[in-house]
Length: 191
Image (cartoon, rainbow, N blue to C red; front, top):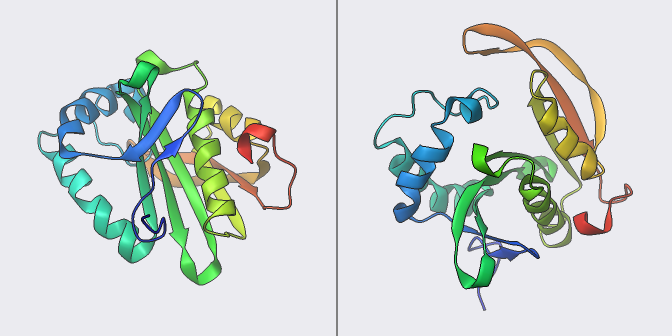
């Protein structure tokens, strides 16, 4: 059996398979993440999404996991054994401080189905139960309260707003910080 800390493990939920990205996912990544409605809710996704960017991004995943503990999972609906890529969830580990932050995006056609919460809960459980992290944090743009609702559903605590913290699409933007400890109460789905 593979060591989950050497090779990014596949995580299963009732409706989803979270797996490593394949180069064959690149066109779908560009389609989903390239939608301006997705890109405008994130800090890192470019718009327009350039040709070749998804392939280059996917090519970094293996080394990032092995060398820095940055896990990036493809969120796939898994009805009846088929896979349909719907988004991404990442866990960015800070090994020195035994903590991590996570981020995510979901394609517009899959918004409001609970996929983001379900995927993030699986990654959070992996972070606490397998990696033995002392803390997991996340931030969202203040202009994206839906992302904050995901964090709240996971049992995360709002720890404050950093005003004009980043430049986003050329404007100063606020970010809202959330965090959770392994000892904090969490819904059963996030354990």
